[in-house]
Every structure is written in structure tokens, then in C-alpha cells.
Image 1 (cartoon, rainbow, N blue to C red):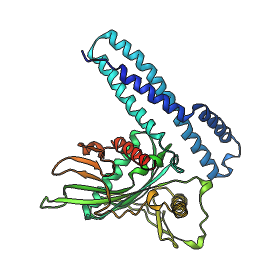
Image 2: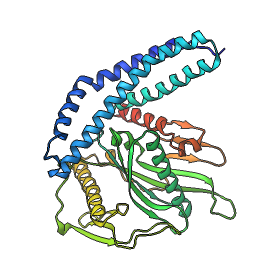
Image 3: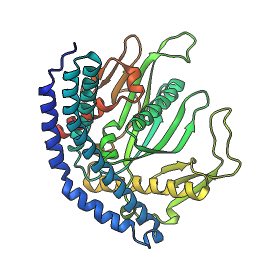
Image 4: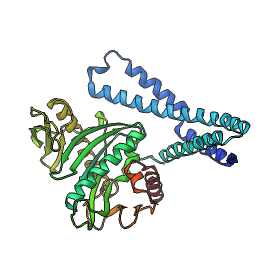
Length: 368
């Protein structure tokens, strides 16, 4: 019979959850949901689309957070019933069910606990993630695509809304770059610790000699700012190019010039979007990403915190923040927190919560 001596673990979970509830402040959250719901029901809500999107997004985020807290509370209560039933049944299947649910609750409460550490100005906002291949040739482009899949799988596992805005494919394999939006509560605060240079060491599948290859990719995370915060960009400061959307060999491509590239002339910042159905939609999406990036740069300059918020990411030797080693041994290690695992495939399949939690705690310790 599998041991069910888990009272200490359950007590620890209840203690952690009580701290989380006090930080979340459910009464205040409920009041906010009521206020946002009233705004969302206004007959003239969509007269101003930007404002309407801000209201509906804030309402969705608040409801998601409330529902998650209530769901965990219910699962903790049900766990006691499940434990009593398992002890009464006295079989391994029932005991395994209890232990699996306990592990699941420890994971979700751990995630919630980490979120309580996110108190930065932009932490509650959605995130714009850009991945760029760096040094390493074809292997770097392939690595960039592996990272894209990793983050999309992570978001999928958490049921976060994701929208790919732009993908630039490399000639032989992989991608040159990709940009996507993660729309979820605290998406920026959570993912911001992933920004930096990522390094892959493996036996190259693109090298006929089978030599070990080191390659790099850069990950940039910026907050998707609310419409009320965006800065005005004069038309004279931007150049808009339209082109035909493209995909890797064999994929169909658009027959109209619907893809949009916007270049901000004063800073050289370039944003592309090709995944929406029309040129108008792609232009609007690209402009919003550009506004978010420019405002972040402005805020960084004003606060003199550029390195803290974004830093200079060169995607090469000397400044990598995480190593993924597939040969001669198996390991993923974060070089800032020393958090490491020996299952790279699980990480590439989206198992990132341990690294993210360690990164957030490490950052919090550095600021205190």
C-alpha cells in the first residue's frame, strides 16, 4: 500500500495558499470585476475600439485570476475528501490519485506564489516575445525555431492566449526571427526573466561530420502596453512597406501584398506583421507592437534602467543566460540562478515553470 502520510504537505499548501489569497485581495478583485463588467455592458463601448479592447482584456484577466483562486480553493477542499476516501478504500489506485492531485496543486500554488512577487510597473500586462537566431548559422536558426515551439507549448499548457504576429523563415532550416503575443495575466512579469541570450550545444544534424556545434538565439520580452499608454508616432517618423507573406518551402503564400513592415526612422526599430488576414489588420498589429517598444525605450531612458528592463542582447559568446546541452551529456542550466534539470526534451516541450520561478525569485532577491 502506498503511504498516504501527506498531512504536512497539505498543511504547507494551505498556508501558502492563505498568503496568496491575502495578497490577491479577493474582495478588491471582485469589486474591480464588477466595475469592469459595467463598463463592458455599455452600449457605446465599441465606439472606441482601443478603449473597448483595454476594458475587455482587463476584465478577462481579472476573471481568470479570480476563477483560478476559487478553483484552487475548491480543489484543496476536495483533496481532504479524496484523502479520506483513499484511506477507506485502502488500495494503490486511490492513493496514487491523491498523490497526483497533491503534486498538481503544489505546482499551481507554486505558480500563484511566484506571481505574488511580480510587482513591477508592467508586470501585469500581456507580453510581446521576439526570438532571433544568432551566431551558429543553420543550427542557430533551427535553435530559434526550437525556442519558439518551446514557448508556444508552455503557453498552451497554461491555456494562455497566443497570437503569432510575424515569422521570418531561414533559407535552409529554422527561422531568422519570430514575434508573438501572449495575452494572459502577468504574462510580461512572468516571461520577462526569459529575456537574454540562450545557448545550445549538440551534435549538429546539419553537419555531415557530426561535429558538436554551439549556437545562440536571443529572446526579447516587452510588455504590450494599454492603448491609453501608447505614444503618438508622427507619420513622418515611420516608413511602411507592404509585401507578400511567405512561408517555408512548400507552403502556400498570400497572393496579395498583405504583410506589413514598419520602420521607425529615428531609432531604426523595425516591426513586421504578416499573420493577420488583411493589410489593415497587419498594420494595426505592427503599429501597436512598435508603440509598445518605443514607449518602453522611452521609459528606460527616463529611469536609466535600460539594462535592467531589456539589456543589450547580442546572441553570442559571453552573455548567455541559459545553456541547453544535448551532447556529450543532457542538461539545461540557467547561469543566473544555477537552476538546472537533466531533461532537455521536457524543457523544449514547454516545461519552463521551474526556470521561470527561479528567475523571478532571483530577481526579487537582487532588488532587496
